[in-house]
Image (cartoon, rainbow, N blue to C red; front, side, top):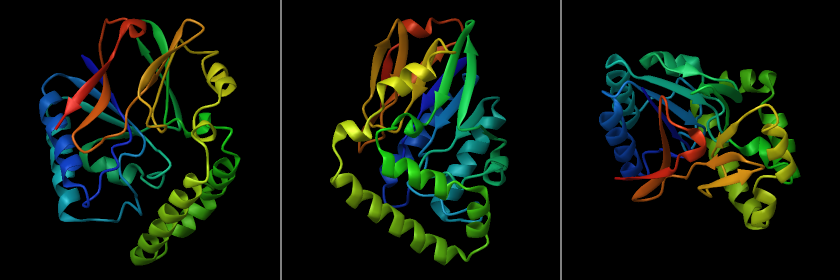
Amino acid sequence: MTYLFIADLHLSPDHPRLVRGFLDLLRHYQDQNTQLYILGDWFNAWIGDDYSAPWLDEVISALKQFTDAGSQVYFLSGNRDFALGQKFLQKFNGVLLSDIETLSIANLKIRLEHGDLLCTDDVSYQKFRKVIRNPLLLGLLKKTPLSFRQKLASGFRKKSREANQLKSYDVMDVNQQAVETALQDADALIHGHTHRPQIHDVSGKPRIVLGDWREHEAQILEISENASVSGCALKTWRY
């Protein structure tokens, strides 16, 4: 069995090369009994499980082939696709995970998350996150017309870009205390969000940061069933 971890693909019709890279990844790993974990920001924006488009139909078809071959897809949401639900995932027998999940590999307890909850110094984002993730508000938004949600998502992305331009990199990165707290009951931590792929040593425990998908390549993590997580390395996936 192969465990494969990716994050921050930001798939959209505006970047067909990224979509093609993801489809190639599915084809490459689908016959390897792969457990694929997508740790948030799979899509550049997700406006609802009722959204459809030809490019997305191609993605769904490839995911269906992937799971039909015996592999599995797990997804936990990021800051751009938190509205993605089980209704979409059931189209290819995918599994929706909670914001923080625990996975056991070779008797090691591994904590999985998108990574935005670790960025506690970004106070304005954390406040916005609490509001926009409110189940009541999300439920109301899902009942609005698709066109309205599309405009709303575009507005959020624009405001986010403007706000981030005024923030330092340190503010938008993880908080060390938050990381240490997250690792208290785990042997390793895997996350994305920060777009700073690297493996850090935190008091003898690895914090593995997955890379965002860029125009030609991404940093992903592949772990075999009996491999040592502490000795693993990020892998470059080119497309």
